[in-house]
Amino acid sequence: MSKKRTSVRKRSKLQEFFIYFVLFLVVLGLTARPLAKGAMFYQSYWGGAVFVPFLLLVAATIVVVAVMNWKGK
Image 1 (cartoon, rainbow, N blue to C red):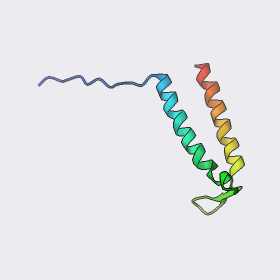
Image 2 (cartoon, one colour; image 1 turned 45 degrees about the horizontal axis):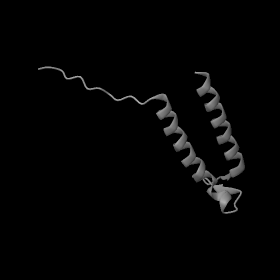
Image 3 (cartoon, rainbow, N blue to C red; image 1 turned 120 degrees about the horizontal axis):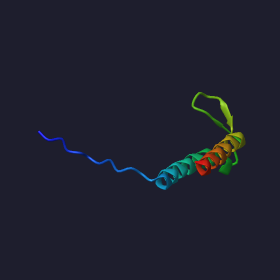
């Protein structure tokens, strides 16, 4: 029996960054939906109120940190 080598296609760093960026935009869009409807809060899975602008600020901070770390590598 011979072992066949299967090559695993690796993504480039740019493709990986693009995939994460698109996923982030989807999540950010879903998060911003209550603001588009005029609501400042929405009910979380556990029943608590979530302040949408704060959540968007946290998401923007994560993006800034990710971009800064991306350029640093």
